[in-house]
Image (cartoon, rainbow, N blue to C red):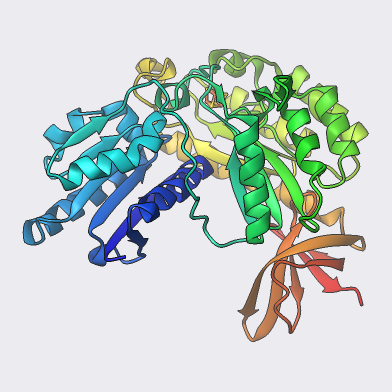
Length: 442
Ligand code: SF4
């Protein structure tokens, strides 16, 4: 291989998974992966548009690369991901040194696009018609967990969210392709697979005999895989009202499927939820959490929240803090509202909350999140749990292994041996905010 490619990935796990696919396709074309952008012949920025900050970062990065091109005119620059899907060929006006723009649904067209670019063409491919999936090897980031997208896009159109515009309408991947990918990841030595989708519960594929397969069916099929040793299965992200009893039964029945649900609530106020175009109210969300907890022992439920949605009053925000505590959520991702062009809420400029208020609300949201995490972690002191080891590190002179329990709790355990990739039994002896302290059981 004499050509090198560098991909800078911003944003979510879906983007990271796309990057692993791009590296695979480019490897097939003779490009070697490099972590040093200065040495690359091909530079790609895999963009995220969930917040303005990420979008700004993408533009500033290509600005830097554009300057490099003045001295090295042969380097090629590509722009992919969610911002690419939105900006399309308009990017060439703003950044004339960019050689190609590839939209989220055209990922598998990358080899053809790069070939054309190598021949001196400038290419934009951002059709919303998904390009047929190809069977390239995936260059996964070395880790314990393999992220496997099972569906993409979203039909929900929450009023703040850009995803339906950047990732398109909901599409489920072929069941057979997913199963092949899972088996390949396990053969490569991954000990955990996480099925990924914007609304993973809406998965609908076709099995080998043409029968319908939903998320439960897919989980059962993966759980039934033998000859791959011990492994775990997770799935994210769930839309609250799409969680069915069948799915909960599947989590209970399948020994490899972990007791973990990520269910974004976004706000703890009914009025705000309505304006967000979420299809549930606080009572419905509470019922789902209670139902899952009543059936799945030691389940972890995590969530997402937005602070300072347009028009959100102090009282409404307080409801969010109250609900977070009442629901005893184990952990939440938090963010201040960031207007995204084309979305409905971005038009409500007169209702925008000033930045300083948003920042202050976010700080309070984070504080409540911290309290919830400590409370959740304390429940496990004295318990014995199984940990899948992800890392071996030295923390201030002490060798420590760290990994996750089945219910997604991070545990740090003093240990002199590197047990990465192994399942170990530990006793929980302490609870910090973001992790548990454990001791090896002999
Ligand atoms: S469910 Fe809502 S927040 Fe989630 S991806 Fe779809 S539109 Fe965005």
